[in-house]
Length: 214
Length: 214
DNA sequence: ACGAATTTCCCCCATATGCGGTATTGTCTC
DNA sequence: GAGACAATACCGCATATGGGGGAAATTCGT
Image 1 (cartoon, chains in turn blue, red, brown, green):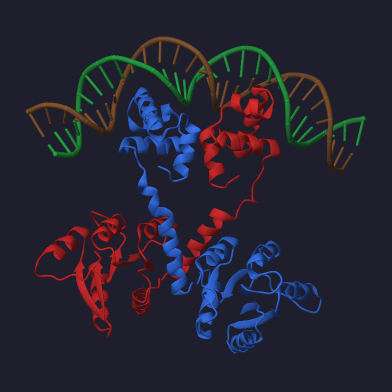
Image 2 (tube, rainbow over the protein chains, first blue to last red):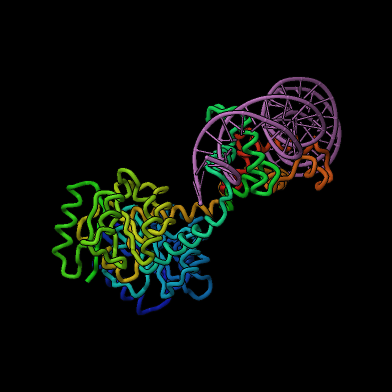
């Protein structure tokens, strides 16, 4: 039995959700609220028992504290809560922010109720659900954030190999041993790496590497 | 009608896929191959027509050139190709790499054929499909890379201050000068930082810092 | 096949870094 | 007021690192 709580300010959507979810065999509708404040009041009141290990359907556009802002608050109190964001906005930035805040799934309110139930089951199973358009946005984001990194790479294969080992914290000596070359050679390579990257010490080189500037 | 090509070295899986996909109304099976090399040969041979605007199901673990390595090659020639990765490995790193390389969807081979067709339709529609477990991995990745700033911070304010300067590539001497303290003090702090972080050189400390582990 | 680029190796020398100690001062807590 | 800890500072020593050279072998591109 999956305990599903809901925070949603739109009466119509909320009613439909509660009605539909109540009919599902494996789902038990828990606390329902129309705002974050309201929700916190309810779960603190003695009459209501809130399962803090279940699933929370959370509207992103709430009056007062927004759903987005509420994610960290909710997770701090209930770290095992699985939050599924509900929203009408499928904008990339909001999605990314929600994901980074700790929500585990993201569903458009236009999604049929049946799919929402499916998402709940998936999340309960340790998975994560994304509407296809949202998934595509995320893919695009990932591609975007990684594609323009290939611009540079002034470095030769050997140099890159050695730089990686530097980043891993290996000493010249270790690198030399691992590559079966002389430490002097390693030093030479590193001098050249520094010249190519326009840096003059390990720290900056590592910084550039880890920032994808290599 | 969606044109779906397939590169997959496992005969059984390939046969099943082709048979099942052929039966679908909206799908036309295009070029099939068991390796990247084979695929390129086929699409270059005059007898075979390859729709470079369709969908390509691409196995990630191919002999010779791997599916992962092939993504950029394929996309360079056919920028409008939608690549769906097929794989048995649902490891986070591979997924991220595939996504970053330009694949638009990622499906486990364990996924039922019906779901694979669903994914093809979604991708054809401009969306993106991810198996739930993969989606969860991605969420976790996003969260990890942005949220966990609270976890650690074993470091005192002064230590953190100094670590930041280390990361910026400053020498002990520079740091000392900037903080109006003795270089010896800086050395002391750094010794303590290393102890706290369980590292024993700059490189590892910088790595931890830039990976958000501090 | 020739030159460019890459990879390999060595020298010297100054400084930086890592690790082992020890010690003083102030602050905070119990 | 004892104990813990942060911040300050110092010493010595071994190794690591950065910068300056030079030079041979190998691979690569055209």
